[in-house]
Length: 238
Ligand SMILES: [Zn+2]
Image (cartoon, rainbow, N blue to C red; front, side):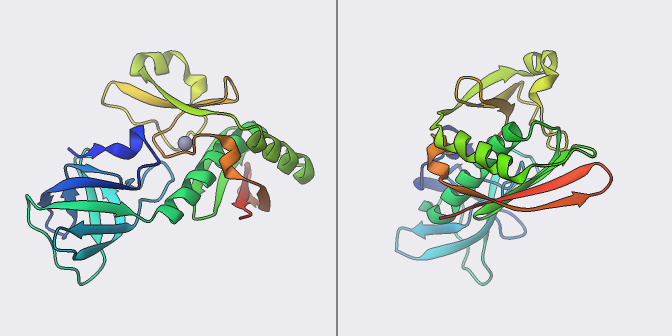
């Protein structure tokens, strides 16, 4: 089991950790990490692991292990692997992660500005998209981007809270994204709240602390995907 330090503090860029194992595919498992593992539409972190002698192992991807509890740091090709017990310092590519956090939080706001059921989504570096089940409903581009930027500029606080699986079952309306099932099994589910009541939904990703950090957003292409779905793209402008 890897302690996911990013879950309590998404702004941690670095941490000390110990190698608990290297899997058969060369993935490095640590006892604790600041590296977000791919999940919930958000890509895993890239970065490096710094050994005490100054050597660096470049990390090209981060994923969950098969047990879903360990986090596997996947080295770039041709890197020398550390042994279990090695102490090191983990560094994420912060510039990239911060853009992912801004885009991720912006997509929560998009689901507020366009209040239709979400059927899918993807968070990228400086841009992201959500698919909405909205039938023949038309999107007013100008109104949408105005609403979205007003929500971001509103400087709403982003906070997390935990509820039990039973509480979630009693409030099915909390789940906006039908294709991304909230993580279960631990008996509790993490909710992300924006402002007092701007948005509240289960989410395990990393977000900015205040919506003003997102900055000005631009609306990309809006595409029809199948009979019901509209794919709406947004991007950061700085
Ligand atoms: Zn989220």
